[in-house]
Structures are given as C-alpha cells and as structure tokens.
Image (cartoon, rainbow, N blue to C red; front, side, top):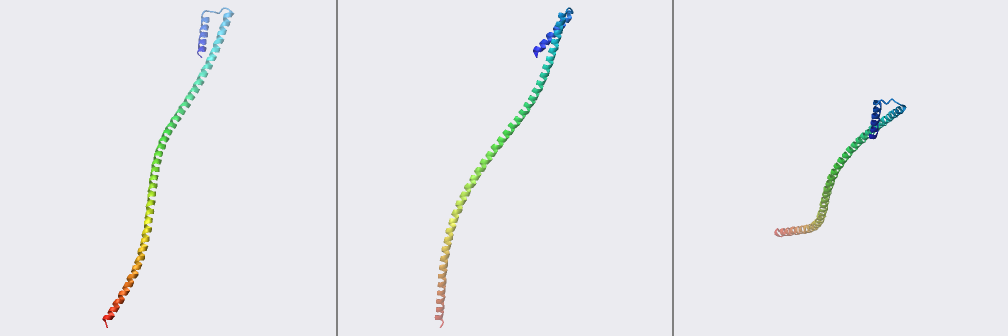
Length: 165
C-alpha cells in the first residue's frame, strides 16, 4: 500500500512539473502525459481497493476482537464457576468425611449396645432360671409349711382333747 502511495505521489509531481514547464510541444510529450494520467488513475484505483481492503480487514479485526472479548468473558466466568465448584466439592468432601465418622461412631455404639443387650439377655435367662428354681423351692417349702401347719393343728386338736375331758 505504501508503494502505491509513493507511485501515486511521483505521478502527481511529474504531471505538475510537465504542466508547469509548458510542455505542450510534441506528441511525445502528450503521449507521456497521457501515460502518466492513466498510471495516476490506475494508482488511484489500486489505492481505493487497498483502502476498501483495509477497511474490510479492520471490520474483521474488530469482529474478531469482539468475539475474543466475549470468549474471554466466558472463560473468566467458567473459571469463577470452576473455583466455586471446587469450594463446594471441598465442603461436601469435608461433610462426607464428618458423616462417615459419625456413621462409624454410630456403628460402634450399635455394636456395643448389641453386646450389652446380649449380656442382659443372658443375665435375664439366668435370672429367670433362678426364679424358676426359687419358685419350685418356694412351692416345695410352702407344701412343707402347709403340712407342718396341718400337723400342728392336729397336735393342738389332740392337746385340746387331752386337756378337755
């Protein structure tokens, strides 16, 4: 593009110099002038194309920059979301570990309670066996007492008969 501008400038200067020196003589100079004018028009056309290309490229560059900025904003948002999610994962991991610890403590307590229950059931069975034995002894002793009371009543009755003639 710079090369085209230099060429255009040189053609313009050459045209002005030829016009200023009064070069109206001869067809050779006229032909050179026409060639210079044609070259000037061609250079102007190329310049206009280059300006259009530059403007088009600038528009594309602006669009790409806008897209880049939008994508960067999305990346920043995703990084923020990622960091938030990492924090939540760490929090959930901590909570999970605490819950696992509580569950383990509950399992230990449950196991201890099961052992205590089994011990209590064993003692209960033993106590029930003792109660049954004592109940059987009580029944036996009650029968003996009843028999002794009956015998005592007979003795008292016999004594009363002996005392009372």
